[in-house]
Image 1: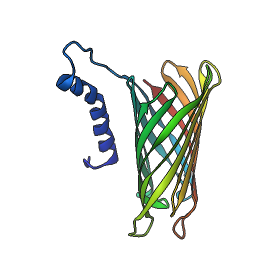
Image 2: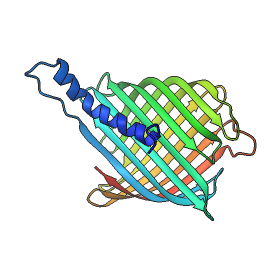
Image 3: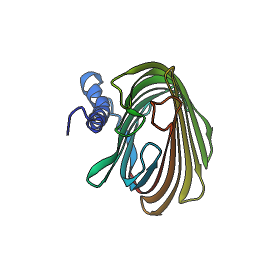
Image 4: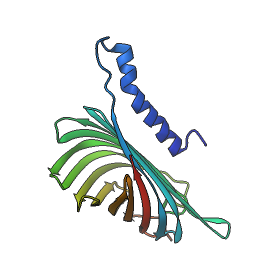
Length: 250
């Protein structure tokens, strides 16, 4: 695998995040201090995937997300990908990765920095990357419902499909994450994210229902909409993705 591939970068970052507190303790901590080990959780998702918009295809997708939680810090690493071919030729190929670090200010408020990379050979943009920082807060936390909202600013670079141009934008970022536990074994989640810059505004919505059926295994039905306000000629502004998946939580 190319060492600059997004999946390789995410893997290297994950190892660094896990090792950092231990290295700090060995180098500068007191001999009597107890090393802080993180809580690690996440999920691996494999499913059937249908795309419509700039590509019309069906394929298998693979997603992985890991959360590393310390007392003061929380790190999230996520990677997604799918590829499809028809008559021996690629008809769809999309990969994305996201890394985010949160620093807790209070039990509910935190500062964050997040980076995202996307590669889509058949979409409106061949490549996109962004880096943003801001503040987040958990506005609702009950036994069944959680709602997190984030707002920040950053920079984005994008390569429109079919061009050799690169657009650089200062962007505003808004993100909401809503989780509702419907029963002991099922839940509904809704993620909404907006990246707005001078050249384009991207809106992503991910709706999902999960139902656990055996141990750490769950069925997941998800529907994703991605809309771009300004796209190259002969490309669609809106892409839609529907997936039925098997998810393993750890």
